[in-house]
Image: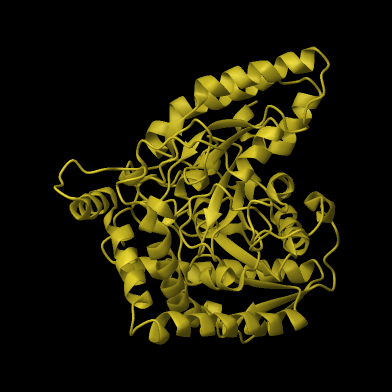
Length: 491
């Protein structure tokens, strides 16, 4: 038995039946990391010794008959923009290369309360800006399905780590598709919850009105379990919402007969790879077999949303990243004669090219004379996008779209062309603009053997619905049983 192949719910059962110990599980993951991490480069900071020590403590509690969480002893990986007390939180940037978080993010407090074991901090695009994890200051993460290809971004590290069985599940963040797109191209399940369902306290901000913490898992059941842990109102985050205590696993396995699935035709137009389209069409047929009603309709938000997203996201990034000035914390240049030079040189040397590009764009759209023409107009379009989704959900329970317009592209293929890179998010950004929940699940592979993801979008706080619909398809098609990453080099 390969322990690292097991899902979290399978690991839970084996811990409960005393077929495995926490130490055995953690040791299996340490061995897997030692074997595969040099090829994948998913981690920035590893916490393996600390993880083993924590596993020993949990086994001791079990032996003494002490009360423990049902998830105690299960390992996890954390995207490196989520503050972890006493551990480096770098945002994959030179700016925060040596920053050690003095406190835990709320989601980390919840993870620790369940005695889930942190194996380390995972790679990402710098300050979560990118779609390929090629903009990390430290390393380029590779896709376990083909090591010459990108794992998506910005949460490429968490997606690749789950796909490669380096961790059984992981936390990431999603600002415009940064969980769903990498989940799609790495063949795992990725959930972006409704804006406000999960606290953002202690998560390094990129675009505060768009950012959301979410999950990477091997299957939908694990996704529901991890959402149970991290969801909930937090008085330290004024944008978080109290929807009451829910068990998201309760909706799994329920019938979807008669459920209405809307297929927005604009999401299947120019730029969407034909093999991706075919896989989604096949998925529609599976849903029809399960008794769901699948209907095409018009939802003209995809192209509007991309421009709107990059205006709002860059404007908020410009504001949020103003705090990195070389004075209070973070990188400080050695080359300066006065405060102005200190700030200018620290920011010039500490930020990478993509981050600087977005700061400049954001500062421009917020500047006097351009604010009304760009930022104000983008907020008006945001309202329009919201209204169009509201209309769609009067008729449909969920919407079905591709997650990414293509499968994983080659490393370096788009990194010198920002506009082409930005188009990777065309199917996902509208969900963040409207604050909706979205999940990406695998729905097949292309002719090169690369995974294809489909996206299910729900109305606000309807996570139970999209999880139920995703679970029904997963059980019908058994993706994990049929396909596995091969760690090949080049297709």
